[in-house]
Every structure is written in structure tokens, then in C-alpha cells.
Image (cartoon, rainbow, N blue to C red; front, top):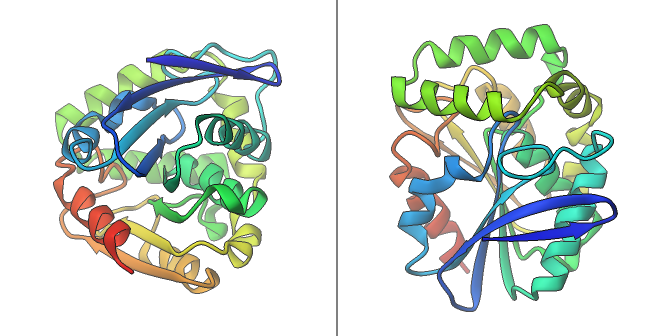
Length: 241
């Protein structure tokens, strides 16, 4: 465990494993690094893994102002630059996919491969009400374990979730995708209401080197409940030439 401070904001970093290839994990809104526990347990024997609490989530303190997606991306990039991680696969889940895409666009030399898992925000449903509805639909099919873990993390995220939601809704990821140079895997749970199939297909098509993989029987939290299929897809992507 370590902290990284830059430009008035703090990241909390949990690191495991070693090796020339690093996998860096960015969580979604209301979540934190702990939701990647099962995924890290599978990947850390073969890769250096870093699971991050973004500012105001998990154990990371709330910054004075809620950062934009772009500012958060610059903060993550500063961490990657300081750690000199070598071959980096940047994995972003939900809101984290927006941050990851901006890192790849704004700091392309730091990202070798990109994984956008359950990418948000669907351009046809860019409103808080619609996103909350879709999340509720998704949670209805999730296991009690996922719901309990998500509820705990949302409570830890504090009273500023409304401002954080506004930050993700203001961001336009579809404008970033065509400028991503790194090979990119779009990962979707086949039952995901928040990131529907048509939207994920559009994301993959906007990327210069994008491909879409769907995981059967999973919803939006595909890397939390039974992380093995997502880990296998990420491993195959990382090892591909």
C-alpha cells in the first residue's frame, strides 16, 4: 500500500507481483480498489498489478474540488510516469474506462494496451436519472455479494457522489476514442444494462484498434462477481502480439 500525491489530489495504490508487464486497474463511480481483489489474485502471479483508489474513493481522501475526468487522467499519468512501470496495460471499469481512455489520449507513451470494461457513459442515455435506472436494473440480477460490496463502497465514497456523477456525465468519451493509439479491448458482460451491446459495439468501432469481447452470464460488475472470465480475456489480450 502506498499513496501518491500530485496537484492537490491523492491516489491510494495497492501493488502486487512483479515483472516487465504491469496491469493498472481503475474502478468505477462509488467503488474503490478493493472491488478488484479477486481479479488481482488471479493476475498477480504473472504481472505486476496496481489497483488504485481514485481521489475521494476507497481510502483516498476527498480532494477540495471534485476533479474532472481529464484532471483525474493527468493524475493517473503522473503516477505511471513516476513508477516507471514499463509495459502498461491500463484497465478501466465503468467510470474508470473514461479515465483510462483519457490517459491513453493525453499521455500515449505511458499506455501500451488499454482495456475498457463496461464503458460509460452510453451517449444515448447521458443523464443521471437514466444511469441510476440502468444501474438498478443491473443490480437486480447481481449476487448479494456484489450488492453488499457495492453498497459499502458507495457509502465510503462520501456525500459528493452527485458532483462525481456530474463529472462523468460532462465527459464525452466518444470524442476520445478515435484518438486512442493503443490496441484496445472493450469488455462487456452480456447482461449489462448500463453498457448495452449497441453502445459497446459503437465504442469498439470508434477505436482505431479496438475489439469487443462479451462475457456470458455477467452484468455491469463483471470483474467483481467471478473475475475468472474477465481475467482470462485480459490475459489473452495482454499476451497477444
